[in-house]
Amino acid sequence: MKLVTVPEMLAIEKEADANGLSYAEMMENAGGGLADVILGLFDGLEELEAFGLVGPGNNGGDTLVALEQLAKSGWRTRAYLIKRKTDEYVKRLEKAGGEILYADNDEKFDALATFIETSDLMLDGVLGTGIKLPLKKDVAKLLVAVNDVLDVLEEPPYVIAVDCPSGIDCETGEAADECIPADLTVTMAAVKQGLLKTPAFEFVGDLSVVDIGLPDDLPALDAVNVEVADAMLVSGLLPERPLEAHKGTFGTALIAAGSANYTGAALLSGKAAYRVGSGLVTMAIPAMLHSALAGQFPEATWSLLPHEGGYIAREAAEVLPKNFERATALLLGPGFGMEDTTLEFLKNLFTGKSAPQKASGRIGFLQEQAEKKEDEAANLPPLVIDADGLKLLAKIDDWHKFLPAPAVLTPHPGEMAVLTELSTEEIQSDRLGVATKYAQEWGNVVVLKGAFTVIAAPDGTSTVIPVASSALAHAGTGDVLAGLIVGLRAQGLDAYDAAVAGAWIHAQAGLIAADALGSTASVLAGDVLEAVPDVMADLEWVI
Image 1: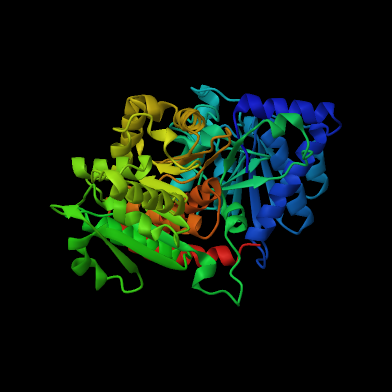
Image 2: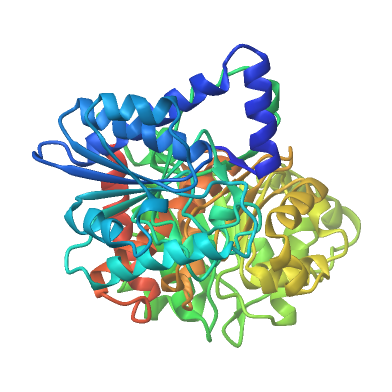
C-alpha cells in the first residue's frame, strides 16, 4: 500500500486520466472494489440493508456505485444525498431498486435516524480528501445528528468510511469534533498520509485499500517511495520453511545484551529472536548474569563476557568475535547501561582495537599476525543496534563509518535525539522526513519507533507501520522488537525487509496482547512476546 499526500493523489489521478484511465472509470473501479469488500465482510448473510451518506464529491460517487452493486446483489439500499444533485449515479441506483432521499427534505433528520436504525451497514461518503477544517455549519450539524443516533443504538450499523471518515483533513491528520468514527476505512488507490496521524487515526478503524485500476508504470505513482505495511507485504517477506530444514537453515542470532541493572532485556530479545523463527540464539552476556538467565532460557547457547560490576567490559571485544564465524546476525545494545567500559567495548569492537598493549620484538610480530588472521575471520555479522547501544554509539566520532552497512538502528525519539542532536519535538514533528534523511546520511536502515513506526532505507524508500497503541509504551517492548529484527536478519532477510517485518509483527503482537488483557495499560513486554506466535500463525494463512 502506498502512502501519499493529497497533492500526490491528485497528480496521480490527473496523470492516469491523461493516459487513458478516465475519472469515470476510476470511480467505477473504486465503487466496485468497495462493494467487493462489503460483500466479503457480509458473506453468507441474507436480507441485508445498506445506507449511504452521499456527499457531492468523488467519494459520494464511489458510494453510489457501491450501493448500486449491492442492490444488484439483493441488498436493500438507501442513499441520503447531501448537496448532491440527481446525476447519472443517482439514476442508476434508483433503477437498481435503491431508495433516494434528499437531506434538504429532512430538516429534522427524522428520515436520517430511521435509515440508520434499520441498516446493517452505513457508508460514510459525505466528505472526501479535499476538505479543510473547520466544517461548515450545515455539514457539522448533519454529522452531529448522525453521531447522536449511532451513540444511542444498542446495535449500530457497521460503519465504513469511503476513502476517509468525514471530518478528517487527509493532509494534516486534524479531525473535527463532529467526525464520524468508522469501523473500517476503505481508501482508494493509496493511503492518504493524514489517516496515519493523530487525532485522525482514532476515527479510521481498520484500514483497507481498493485498487482503482491505475497502471503499474504510471510515473506519478512510481515516484511515491513510501509504503504502508500490511499482512500481505509482511507475509511475502518471511523466509520459506522447507520440511527438510534443520536449525542451521534458519541462521544463528548472536545477541550481546544485558547488565546487572537490566537483566530482562537480554531475555526478552533472545526469546523474540527464537519466536520469529531463528534456528539458534546465542546470548553474549556479562558472565555474572548467566545463573539468573540460563534456567529461564534453556533453548539458548551462551557466551560469557568479561564484565565490570555487571556491565560488559572493554575486554569483551576480544571474546565476542569468537562467535562471529557461526553468527548470521548480531544484536548489540539491549540493557547495556551507559558505563565507560561498555563504551570502550564498542569502540574496540568497531575499530578492531583491542585493550591489551602489544608485546615488542618477535613475540609482538607473531601476536600481530595472529590478530590479523582473527580480524579477517571475525568481520562483524549483519548488525542490529538498539537502546543503550545507540546512545553509546553516539559517543564515538564518525560512528556510522565503522558499521557494516546497512546496519539496522532502532531508536525511539529520545535516542534519535541523541544520535542527531535534534530535539524530540523536531523529530516528532516530521518523523518520516527525519528518519529518511538520516538513513540516507548514515547509510543504514533507521527504525524510528513510536506511534506509526517509520522504517527508512539508505536509498530513500520508507515504510510506515499503521499502528498507534499505548500497549507498546512499556519497558522492554523495544527489546522484543530488536530481537524480532535480529531473528529475521539471521534467517537471511536483508536489513530493510527484516526491519519492516519485525516492526509490523511487533505492532500486531501489541494489539493482540492488549485485546487479550482487555486493557493497554496492563500489557507487559512479556505479553507482547507471548503474542508473537499468534501473529506468525495468522501470517501463514495470508494469501
